[in-house]
Length: 545
Image 1 (cartoon, rainbow, N blue to C red):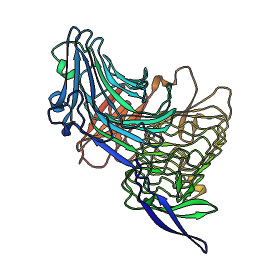
Image 2: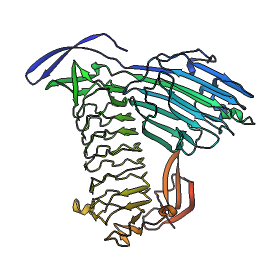
Image 3: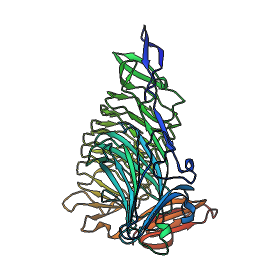
Image 4: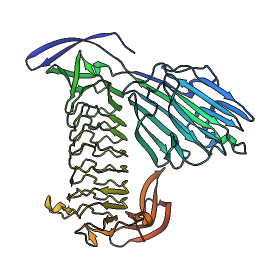
């Protein structure tokens, strides 16, 4: 939506004074929720701007279909009043479709909540479809009679719970969409999808098909609510900028910036070429950052997004060739960052203290990585190490407790101080080459701390490689066999109210002095152990047999 209000901007560059006029392009934030409908959610109803009316198609078949605004607590959910729908019996189906007033574009964001209780029953199925403007399905999320949720037939969750799932989709281009989902117990999922049917997202269709008719049929419904659709570039008045070499340079974002920010391709008629040092620092109300289609930003300065504590999604521009130091330092809610293929270097502490970051994609052309890049990223689950990086930098995964498995290519020649310090969830490291050199922190300070301090992982190596001993940097070693997972161990934690719950596989042990360890339990599959707070200071670990 264009707001044809003209603003006069006074810009300075060196000794030259500029006076420019520009059109302010304002982002539209559209929302809708069940509370707007009372008890009259029917075909053709519409209580939210930016969306077309609901189109509800029902087919009772040999059973029945029902829908409405229901109290989700009646089936054990915590969504309050929400849209709900059930199709029960053979040949029954129900579709509730909501198209957008205009299709999404690059950088636009669509969010909503979803919840469910019992499985769909034999032959039953429920979920949602994202569609383009022609009604073609772009992607499909399905829950059937099993516990799993699938994306286009690929499993994304192994279980579903009573927790409210929060879904976020960010359109990157006509054939790519990034999405993440949280709230499903301890499981989260995030990915950048290459769409099989390319298209701009233009609507959603929730569906329920043939749940088995039994005593618990009322619990087989699908609940959804709290729609949010952010479209369009951010208003130019949000940015302070100057013109340098005929390109706009953003030096500062307004502290009033909030929600989903899309950096425009042009400011004052000039292509945006760079974002300055600390430009968005401490903009604590921004929830996502992306760059408009056709943007030509080639440089984002150090600490540009430092301290953006509400930032959850970041999609960096395709013209970027490096990630500056401390770029996302302290973005404690950042869950996913899309790094373009052209990036060849990542600076020191670029993602440090991003405690919710779960996945990261290293570009194929990456040749340089700084120190402490993922320091204290406690939720980071996976890390695919590029072959071009021959040295594992110091403190790169310091306190990354969520990583359970790691494979390091044969090109690794050295692992530096504290690289995997206190990665207590690390089950094993598979080395594909000869034993690399190890640097202790005594090379930097007086404290002799080695890369794997406080880790209980097994170091597996290939039989044909050299320089391996029975102990490597404090880790027990073994030849990579046919089934290294046979003694798999893991340790995760979550809070349930004010109670700490440990989820473990293996032998769970505790200590108060790091010398004497007491075994609390043993488990071959994930088992919960509830910790009584207030019994003094304890540390926990899991070891194999």
